[in-house]
Amino acid sequence: MLSTVSGNPVPVRERYALSCQFLNGFLHSPGITLKGSGMPLFRRFFGGTKIVVAAFLALELCLPGPLPAQPRPDSITGDIINTSFSMVNYSQFNMRLSDFKTKLIILDFWATWCSSCLSAFPKLENLQETFKDELQIVLVNGKASGDSKEKVSQFLRSWQARNGRQLKLPIIVGDSVLSHQFAHNILPHYVWIGQGGKILGTSASADLTEPAIRAALSSQQVLFTGKQDINPVNPLYLSGLPDPAQVQQFTILLKGWQKGLPGGIFYRSANGIKNGLAITNMPLLKIYELLIGQLNPNIGPDQFILEGLDSASYFAPNDTADFEAWYTKHLYSIDLVAPGLPIAVVLERMLTYLNDYSCLSAKITTRPMLSWILVSDRENMGKKKNVRAGNIRMSLTECLDELKKIKHTQFCIDETGLSPGFTLSLAGPLNNESVTGALRKNGLKLVPEWRHTDVVVVTENQKD
Image (cartoon, rainbow, N blue to C red; front, side, top):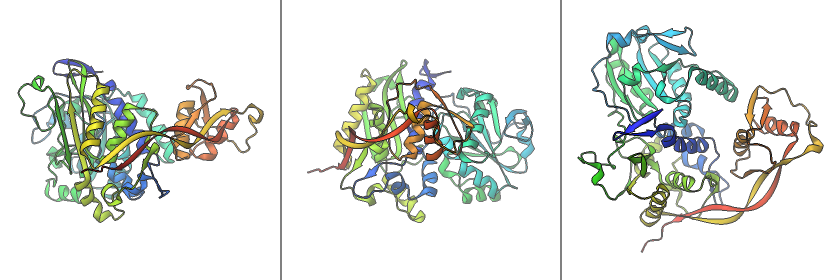
């Protein structure tokens, strides 16, 4: 699937898969180590499991590619509200929006590869349960996502195996009608439709709250300003520039929540060539993770060591009441455009710019770190007791990813010599027992060992 920027075709998945993939790893990882605390940054930063979900709902990182803007009408037409959509995860094979004309409808545009989309599903399910007689949330998977009906069905089976329960929200598959009517650049994208098909607004994940839904139900109005997709052509806050090609170099670093911008990351392109990067409304430490992760894919979140940092400035408070105030004050946005330079140089310049002008400095160095080495263990093959027949099929690469989560480390190294696509059969739920049992059954084992490896040491920037 191709997307067009300034009349030039740009492969969408190539442009955006990296950022989504990196976030997916971050969402499921235990986090950065705060030196001396023994507590992962992931927990400290978001103040516990419940806040973890709420925080990442504001980070719309997955972008399907710019679509032509459509003038937004006051209400959806009869043709659209009565269109029959193909469904999965629903009691019927087809559905019409008119089936829910007495309810508030929220359309959630998503894709199976969009990590921030998937992280919002538990919150959406809770809201649906709370307002079940007055609200209908519908997941919309469009043709532009590159997903198929079979892939969505496979995702649902995987979701159930991993979470021990079925995803309850109905899903429109293969959509083109709603995606055209409500054109957008960034996923997830939420459209609020009131009674009679009245379009109340579009929003980001952070606006999906119980008070906002109650207000929409009672007054047919929304309390938020609406979601604005980042302009895919012009640099940040230069939306009125008549000719983006005039920009020879542009850099901006902003502290604090930028109202109206989503939280996310995407590459800028000209003539099909990446020439810049924008990262908006993210914690400063997360920006460092993304940049360094793109420059060196072998460095993950657990390889960050934070030394001497003031926790109040970099970690959100545990108290939910104080979280919003912290979130508004301590997020950052950065945009750097440098036509004619390789994208790796653009990333390096952005990292240098942050080290020079932000309140932190991140340096890559080498230190001994405890690693888990995956090796062959043919002597004890099949001797692991109580290994049940598996209902989950995973490649060796996927299994290593699970081990990183289970062992709370990025340092899982494959030294088996097997193909990364080598398939294992695991019995869910996925935990240390089921994964190590499946490894032993296949003649493999994990061995702890200290290895010298690259880490990122983050300190406060000492300015004169």
